[in-house]
Length: 117
Figure: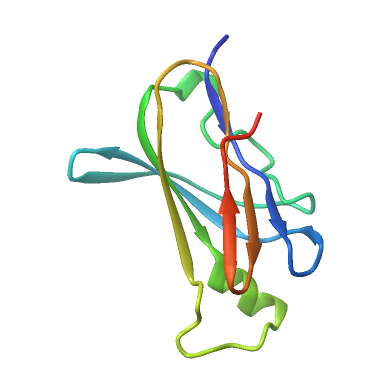
């Protein structure tokens, strides 16, 4: 199986997919952090394309950055100064060519993630 990376973001406070949430993918190489792609979630809380498709997949360390503050601001969620959750970085390793699914369950005051399938 060839490797690839996907996500699914659910807004647990509203009970629906998190549409319009900006996500950035970085490759981590020692102290170097390189931006590979920027995407936005669709109406199902997923991206329209694989975050890291098969033809660009390499094992290594990556970071997904979820821009939760911008998403919550766009919904009109009452802002705090500073907002409790603004940017959520998830750093993880991919050690073999397989499907890596990294979901995010999001609310204004907490989040959860895991390696999905």
